[in-house]
Image (cartoon, rainbow, N blue to C red; front, side, top):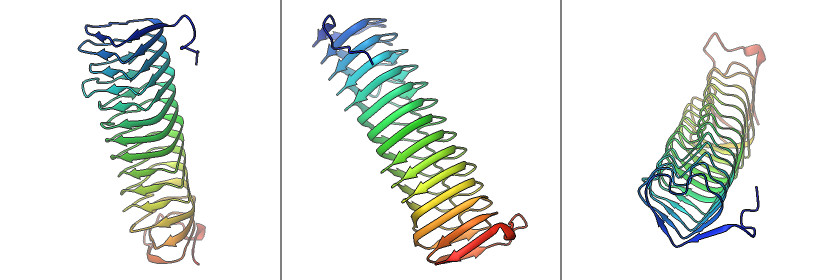
Amino acid sequence: MANIASAGCQLIENQSFSGERSLFARRDLKVVKCTFLEGESPLKECRNIEAVDCLFTWKYPFWYGKNLRVEGCTFDNEAHAGIWYSEDSEFSRCIFKEPKCIRHASSISLVDCRFEQATETLWWCDHIDGRNLFLKGDYVGLQTVSSTFDHIEIQGNYPFDGSRDIKITNSILKSKDAFWNSSSITLENCTIDGEYFGWNSKDITLRHCLIRSHQGFCYMSGITLIDCTIDNSDLTFEYSSGCDVQISSGVLDLKNPISGKFSAPAYKGILLDSPRVKKDELTIVKR
């Protein structure tokens, strides 16, 4: 990212803007404690912009931007679809109150941010680096790829549908239908609290995770669990293949896994009554 606070950068401070495209396609600005009132796309097509402690109250504030550094700003509930088609940018200590906030974005850093209405946010993005985030809303992260998240909390259903090459660490997902239709996913030291985790996905790895999921891990292939805890989860792994599941604590309840190896300290039930089960390719061990 360019050093946008260098000498020669124009400072705009303590001003209010209204009307469409109020600072359209500007370059090399530092905008401090400004309010953007009614008027679409105030900073569309901008480059090398620093925005600090600003309030955005209307639609599409940062579209097609590059080299944006946005700190301590609030995107109000009418700042709909705030950051689309932007790249190489940083957002820190921001509060987002609007849905559909970040889409079609690339190489974006998000640090210490709250997404209070995160519905349909982070769609079709790549190379997102998110740390210390709170996201409340459904359908976060649709088809987002090649991204990492650490210390995030998601309160909402259907996150990361169709995503791939995602790593999440030290996080909490209070979500049903998380990671459907996904591939190449790694979760470490996470809590997953919600039914139907991971259906139709492949190459999924969970390490040191706490899992609560009714009918979780079904119709999957290449699913690996390492040193995980299962709590209050039933009818799991139905029609999943290539499983390598090591449960360190809790009670595992299996329903017709196709193939793989399962190891757990206790089992609530083991149902193997489907002709799809390949019993010669299935190992179930009680430790």
